Length: 128
Image (cartoon, rainbow, N blue to C red):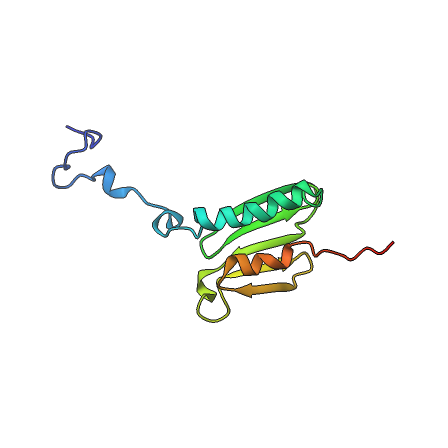
């Protein structure tokens, strides 16, 4: 008798092993992620701040309900900022937000480059 490993249907009264495969819930729903355009905008700001010596490391998390880009000054610290994409907030407050280490939402909106503007260093007037 075939044990079901060949991929065919099992005779009546025997279990088909392929029917018992359980697909994890995390694989049935797509995770939220940043697309190419969004990552380019984030990495442009990140690259400028790394070149200025302000930031050194980052992490990206793709969760079921949101995507998070965390920015670190040093690897062993908590993130200085988190850039979050949460599609469930898109109609109410905007899908993108920049959150400080303290949990303060610095800026939120639907236009990612405008939201990321809060992270850009402001020019300071130096008098001599």
